[in-house]
Image 1 (cartoon, protein in one colour):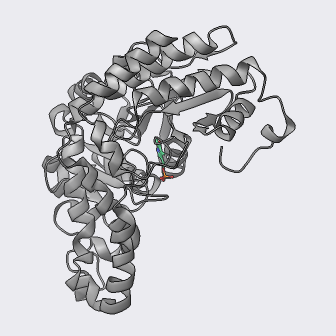
Image 2 (cartoon, protein in one colour):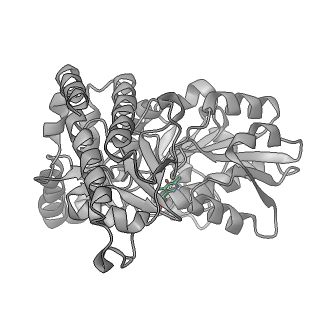
Length: 409
Ligand SMILES: *Cc1c(COP(=O)(O)O)cnc(C)c1O
C-alpha cells in the first residue's frame, strides 16, 4: 500500500496543474469523483454572478443587453469553448441544453441527406440522445442502434447520419472519432458527435477530423454550474447551407426588425432560438477562465494517470470483492472516468458518499467515478479506493438507509 501512496505523492509533486486546485472551491474532507456529472465551482464565479445580479440586473436593467454585452454572450462563450474542442472561432454557439441542441442539429443533418433517413447510433449512447432521435424521426426516418464495436461495419448505404457520443457515459469507452468520421465522410454520411464527456476532459479536434456537427455540455467538465447552457458546433463549410429546425427570433438575421417572416442569421447564430439565460451564461463564462494557460494534452495525460492509479488502487484495496471493471483497462481507450459492475452498487455508492467520497451510480449495477484533472490530486484517488475497500470489507453499505433511492442517482 505504501508504494501506491508514494507513487501518488510523486505524481502530485510532478503535476504541472497542481496549483489549479486552488482555483476551485473544494469542500473540506470531500473527495469529489463526480465532476463528469456536475463540475466543481471555480472560486471566482460567485463574485461574477453576484455582480451580474446586483449591478447588471439591479442597476443596468434593460440597458444591460447592450452595455453588458449580454446579447453577444452565446457567441463569445462559444468562441471560448472552441479551442477546447478543436474548433475555429465562429463555429460554436453556447445556447439551450444538449438535448435541444441535438434535436436542432439532427434535423439539420437529416435535411442534408433527404434520400437516406436512417440515423446510426450505438446501444450505449446516452438515453436522451436516443430519445431525441426517436422523437425527431417519428414518422420520417429510422434510428438504428448497434453495439459500439459494430458501428464502423454498420455504415451501410441507407445510413444518412451517424450520431455518436465520443465517451460512453457508463463505461467511459472511447470511440475512435477520427477513424469513424473519416469512414463516414468517405460514404457521404453526415456526422454528429456528442462531446458531453469530452469537452474539458481531453483534447478534441473537431475541425481536424472533419466532423459536421457536435453538441456538448456546459455543466460537466466545463464547470458551468447546475443546468448550465450547452454548446453546438457546425462545420464552417456547411454553415451557410444548413438551417435550424427551431427557428426563433434570436436566430433571425435581424431580431429587432420584428419581421413577420423568418430569415436565418449568417453562420452559427442561426442556431440560437430564444433569449439566452444570462445569469447561467455569466457563470459559465466566468468558469471558463480556469482554462487560461491550460494545455489539453497535459490535462489528458493527467486524466489517464489518475484513472490508471485509481484502477490499481481499487485492485489493491478491493480486489478480493466482486467488482468487475466496466471500463477499458487501457487508458487510451477510456475517457476521464472509470466504472465497475458492483452487486448492490447503489448502496455501495451511498455508503461511499456518506464517507465523503462522491461518485455516482448508473443502472443496472455500475458505480462510476469521474476524474476532473484540474481539481483532483493523485493522493486523493488512492484514498478514495481505500475507503471503497473498507466499505466492502466491513459491509458498511448493507444498511436500509443506503438502499432508499433518490430521484437523482
Ligand atoms: C450529460 C449528457 C447529456 C445531457 O443533456 P441535457 O440536455 O443537458 O440534460 C446529453 N448527452 C450526453 C451524452 C450526456 O452525457
